[in-house]
Image (cartoon, rainbow, N blue to C red; front, side, top):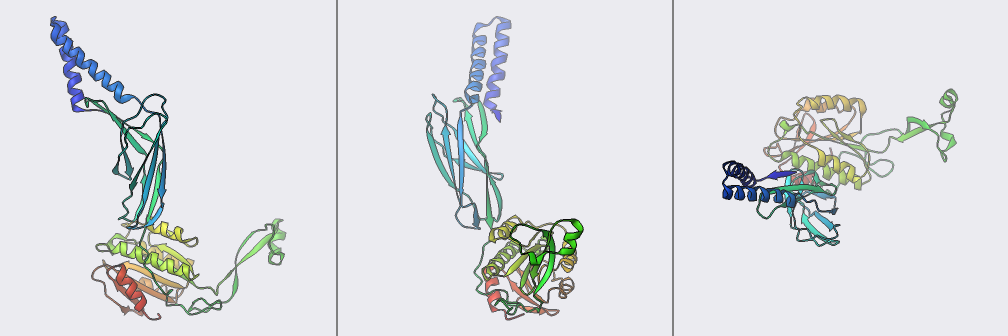
Length: 378
């Protein structure tokens, strides 16, 4: 990307006028000065327009970090030119924010490494780079910038507060985990194609005979508990930093449940669902979460959950920006007998019960941890 500065335009235009008028009126001095000015402008274009041969390598450590923790970028800039050293002004970008990169003079076939800290005070997914290298002539007439290297990504996760207990709404299952809901044992889930090593006792012979290839029954153990964290991501539900507190609470519950070996699903009222995976899969989804404007999202999500039934224990996280919508939550009790709501942000109702639903109130993450640990079975 190139840019002629105001000084450059002034010199070029005035020089051209002086040269034309001087030549036309046969005044040697103005024509000479004008010609020199135009020549200086052309030389500035050539100097700033020279493209150095650079190889830029980026490393980010760590790529995933909790909000407020340290994250550092290292940029290795190698001058692949054979004869000229490169002096440059460089900056990196973090989404739309520029970060100055203090690159010094890089000699031919040499490499310079610079590092800088990524600001992690905001939760989110941030794109780093590419590195932009700017050049300008000594007179400041022309500025040119070019991009080098690839981009990187940093996931800034919510803060995970230590929860020392798994969700209290569940009682112990046959495997030593907790589940207040009584279920059967193994139940049919789906059919799939046979792969080498499958137990032939699980072949579904009727379907196999009909389609001409072996089909296997897949069963699931319904005695194992499953927790659903439903995060309200409607903008109108929150005040202040309430949504960030809700994301922190969701992350804390998920990590605690995974530590206890519980199956867990994360659902957002906007429709996103993470029903399996490791810790990073859930926390990445929370890093990507943004408040949305769909005020009917909860109604649509409730209908979907009643049909899908992602789990038996449901924890609803919302903000203090609107009254708790208990009719919608109560309609989920048939499929999710263990139900808990948390209202997060300023002016929350505190620890109470609304229409038979236990409610925790907390202004921030620390209060949520205290409320969680202080809550009895529900």
